[in-house]
Amino acid sequence: MLAESEQQQPITYNHYYTDNVQKSRLDSTQKTIERAMEKVNVDPDDLEGTAVGNMSLERGV
Image (tube, rainbow, N blue to C red):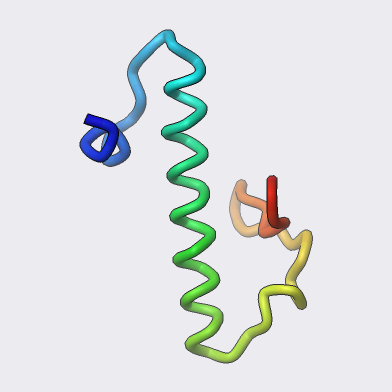
C-alpha cells in the first residue's frame, strides 16, 4: 500500500503517514539528484545548502 501511495498525492488526515510519504519522496528525489551529479562529476558537498526548486540539498533536512 505504501509503494502505491508514494506515486499519488497523499490523501489522509493522519499527519504521520503523510509526513512519511513526503519524506520518502524527498529522499528519493535527493538520491536521484546525487546520482545525476555523480554522472557529471559534481561533488554534492560543493552545493551544500543550495536550493533546487523548493528542495534544499542540505543533508538531514
